[in-house]
Length: 437
Image (cartoon, rainbow, N blue to C red):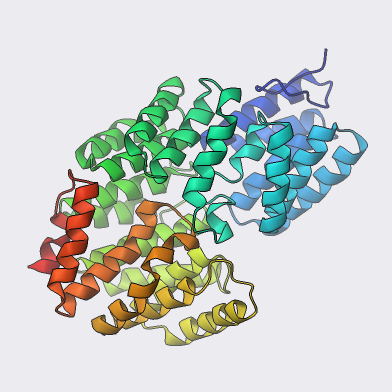
């Protein structure tokens, strides 16, 4: 009888050790847990010709922007699976390789075709899910709905699987079905507490329904079980910092930044390093709290090394935060020129919203609040196309609201805040206390 993965799919290895290590490595990866890379390396060592651990290891390299290593592992997996692999494994390897190579349209098409034939291939199904998945970074305006609908199509194949409940629940939350999304995600979390993606998804639901104090308690109780090297460790505490800002507690938010988000403290992947740091510092400043200039300068120096050129729109927007806050006009002008050329050439799927946000952030930093609001107003309904989660993208709306306040358009600002409070009635007003006086 062939060896199988946890979802009952055959594995092209005769090594029980390799199969067991691969199953465990995949579970650790799907949980965002520490030990993933080491466990996959054990699978590779036990059977060097088994392709699937190689492509899974490539994906972990890609998480940390180790592009050369990721592509080499993907190439090795392609060669190995051609020699010894099932049709499902060949499609699995090719789909992940396309994603690793940044060939998003091809990867999405391959993923959808693969999932039709093998819906229980969780590693492939994971590719479009989450705030940094293929759908989120595709430029689609309806990627939240697309994730939810994909999960609904395959749900009957998963029953009470801890990973699927985690991701499908989060998809519900981001698509606006917050109460159901939280309940489903919490079911998955209860089945496996050593699951950073579940803790993270629950925090998103709590953000949406205004359960700020409950989210704070969850982080305090759960984070001691998760090593600082975990892929989501810093980001989960970033959520706690957002909660502190809801209480108007800038000192606590800055303490969290210094502890786990500052470049010399974090162990996060590069994309999280720049997005979590920039967005928290920007929020603090926008809400009227003092942020030491040295924090911006240090973080910007790291960001420029990690993302020296225009790349994902989500990264570009956060690099614009750094450039605006540090008045690094040359860096932003160079990045904007590339972005606008890609837009002209039809190679920017997210569209005109990307350069518009960048220009608006500069206007905000220059205290030209009327211009900032005027630039953002026409594209607010397109911000979703940059990817990320609603909690992350809300920064743009917050910037718009503060720009309205500071340009004297208080009725429009209050109308937007009233609409938000209607959606999330448990929210406090602490974040606006300094700004509104």
